[in-house]
Image 1 (cartoon, rainbow, N blue to C red):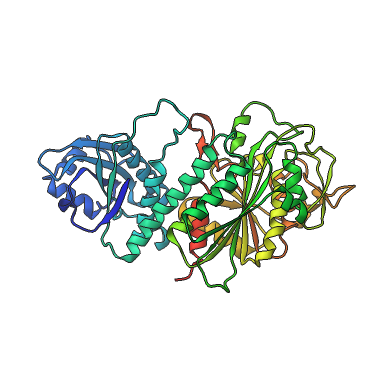
Image 2: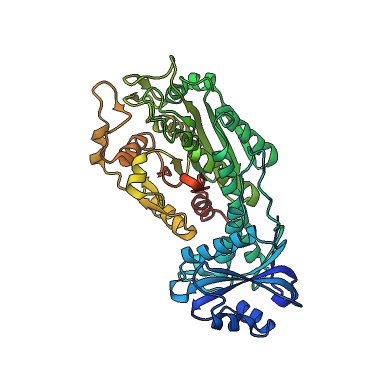
Length: 497
C-alpha cells in the first residue's frame, strides 16, 4: 500500500475516490466546501434532499462524471460540539471500511481539516494526521495466513491524505501514525498466530529476525540452562510441564545518549495457557493463545521505534513460557525461590503470569532504568472491573501513572488506575513461604499487582493489565494491537528532539 501526504488543492489531485467529511451540524471544513464548489453544489444539494447524511460514521458513495475523481465518498462526522477524538476516530474507521470493501484503487482523503474538540494534543492537524495514518494501517489489516481459500484482496493500493502543509512536522506525525498502525498489526499477527507455531523459541526467533532487519535493535536470548544458572526459577517452574522450553528475550534500542537511562518494557509471553495442573475449563481455551499479548505489544512497540528511530533508549524484556500440565509440571503447594531470593508458594498454577514476570522485573534492575512498564493479560478480574474498554493500570509512582494515563487519553488507547494500597498486601501472606501467588477472589487484579510490586521496589514501575483489551472474542475474534498506541505515545513524550 502506498501512503502519502499532499498539500495541493484537492481539484489538482486525480483519484478514483475523493473522501470528504460532512458535519451533521456545524461549519463545513474547507476541503468539503472546495469539493462542493468543484462539483457545482452537488454535496449541498444531496444533503438538502436527504440523499447523504452528516450523522457520525454514515458513509455514502456518489458516482461522478467528468471530474478529477471517479466517485465521491462522503462520511458523516456528527456535530461540531460532539466531535471528540473518539467520535472522529469512528468516522475514520467507517471511511476506511468503505474504501477497503469498495471498487477504488486510489483515494484522496480530505479529513485533516475537520474540527475536533480538545487541546492541541488531540485536535491539531498533526494529531489528526497521526490518527489518520494509524487508522489506515489498523483497519486495512487482514489475517488469512492459514486459510486455503483466501478472501478477495482489497483493490485499494494508493492513498493520498490532504494536509495544509507537507512540512516536517506534518510528515513526521503522519509517518508516526502509519508506523504505530504497523506496530499494532505486527502485534496482532503475533497474537493471531496459532500456538502450535507460536511457542517461546519461535517468539525468540522473531526477536532475532527483528535484530537482523533493523541495525538499531540488539537481541539476546537466554535459554533454560542460562536461566537456571542465574536463579530464574519461577519462569522455569511455569515452563516445566511443557515440551516447549521457556526463553527470556531481551531487545535493546539505543537511540538516545549513552548516559541516558533506558525506559524498560516487560511483556508476559505465555504462548499458551492451559492453567497447568489448575486446569482451565475447556470452553474458550483456544483464546489462551492470546496470553502472550503483553509480549506481542512489546514486539509491536519495538518495531515502531525501529522504524521511526526516536532519540530514546528502550530495553524490552519478554518472559516466554508455555503453561501445560504433565508429570513434570509445577503443583499447587510447591515453593519456588525467585531470582530476587524471595520464596513463593504456588497455590494456583493458573496464576502463572505473575511468576514469569517477577523474575523479569528483578532481572531488569541491571539496566538502571528510568522507568519500567510491564504489560500482561494477567487477570480475568480486570475484565470484571473494567470490561473490554480500558486497560487496568497500577503503579508505585504517581508521575509515571499520570503520564501513562495521559498517553492513553491522547491516543484513545485508554487505561484506568486502580489502587495499590498496602492494605491489600496481606492477602498474599503464606504460612510456609515469603508469599503466595494468589490473594483470593477479592480485588484479584490489585493483589496480582501487589505481588509484582514486591519485585519492582528499586525503580518507578507501572503494571498494565490488558486481559480485557488485548483481543476481541466472539465473531470478531482477534488480537487488537493494544496497548501499542499508548506505549508509543508515552515513549515519544520522553524522546529527545
